[in-house]
Image (cartoon, rainbow, N blue to C red):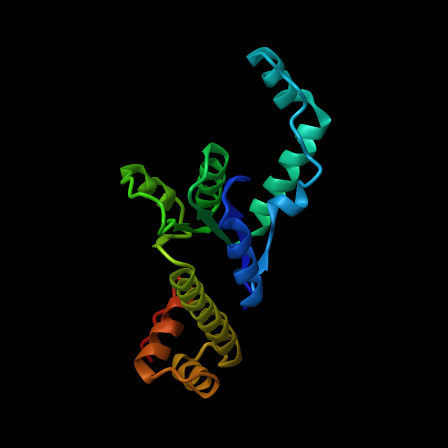
Length: 199
């Protein structure tokens, strides 16, 4: 399963291009906001009133916002690449609230600045993880892919088994290297709510 990743970060983050390149090199589909918005620049404004008017009615601002929000709706993982500013944190919160997995990638070279409220990024059902290196991030994403693939296979095995839990476990074990208990647990997770896995 290819992951669709939205990397939320800052235009000023020097590590951002390397993270995007590495994620793509590992087979992930990655939205690059710098690439997508390369021609966008804020129209000049010198007062809060001008800024608010642009937020509410400028077509260039609206188009840039739509591109980024559409990409957030499209993704299934949001990686918050620190250091970054308000926009990236708002994007990560939006992703979490819409059921996307959020991974906070702390910059290992950055000074440690503990912040309690990163836990809020786990508000949605997608989950929250933390990484301190690109290798750790890739490991988390590989584990997510494996879980998703096993769930998809379990759903397919359940359908092919004609709703027979024992047969579904057998089918799933034929397709994967899961042990009996792991396959049984995977089938249990995809059963209809009114169905018990016990034969």
